[in-house]
Image (cartoon, rainbow, N blue to C red; front, side, top):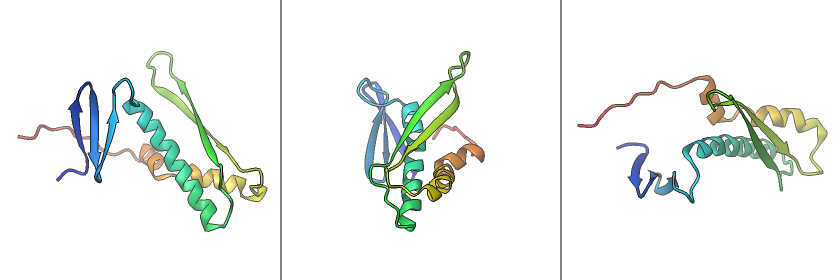
Length: 123
């Protein structure tokens, strides 16, 4: 059984996994690339939350803002900039360590240790 199944339906691609369905590619749904960028941001946010929780630090209202720079020829992202927006009472002595922790999220690690991709046809 596959970890995830992608089905084409009505101009979009639906990803089915863990009992959930995620729709993408339609006019009212995010594009696959939007989901990729969102996965980087949400992974960083949850990693930051874990850092805060393990140290009893307030993370209420914390946000991550993402901006992309694109290569003018390829239109591929050349830089992904993430900014943490912290609660006003966040301790200054934890800022650098929080940035380091959030920047080490599991999704981002896959960009540095690239997996091998394989596409086949099921007979």
